[in-house]
Amino acid sequence: MPTNYSYNKTSDGFHVIITPASNIQNKNIRSRITQQTDYGINGGFFNPISTTKAPTECLSIAVTPNNTHDTKANAKGNSRGTAFIYTESNKTKMGIARASSVTDLKKQMGTSVAYKSIISGGSLSLKKEEEAWLKDLKDIEKFDLNGTLRYTDSTGRTGLGFKIVNNIWQVYLVVHENATLKQLRNYFIKQDCFEAILLDGGGSSGIQVKNSAGTMVKYEQTRYIYNMVKLINIT
Image (cartoon, rainbow, N blue to C red; front, side, top):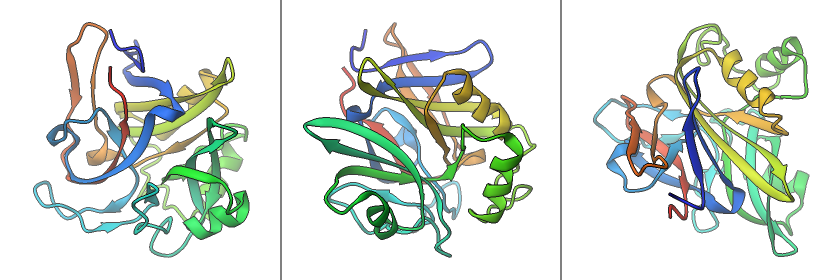
């Protein structure tokens, strides 16, 4: 049984990995998750090429300390929901803010912060009413709710949220094979997460992880994706 994370599939179909924030990082893979040996979920938005060719253009921030070439939240520089993992006083912590770039995030949070990973997608704004959240997605983040996000459609959905449990920043990595965006958001609300972001969905949604019985759980997305949120320690 792994000690650095837990996995379960809920009765309503959500695949859920729970792990400390210190145990995740961005990894740019440009392949399917199931072609990797890492465990985790798919990352943020990108320009897909096909089901067999690696994408070359990332449309979301996907950064680790040694990998800083994907620095904008999207090609147009819109401000979008961005998760950042950092260390402070020898403790790994996590936050979520709207940012248009790594530079913008550091301007908001401070350049002295020791960032470990920065991953953007879109805001789920758990503390707001649904109407206000959708208005911000459209007006601030410039998402096409009927196009890019297919808000009312049941499709593959992926998200990342967090809350603090016993002074440990715990991350929820969540994938559903066929849910609406509202259902994904409501999952994080029901778990009393502090905040959450959506990641790429549809043919990009995917997960690879072992359950407590040691059986590999795989949900294969159809696209070659740009990046994933990986578990660092899988034991």
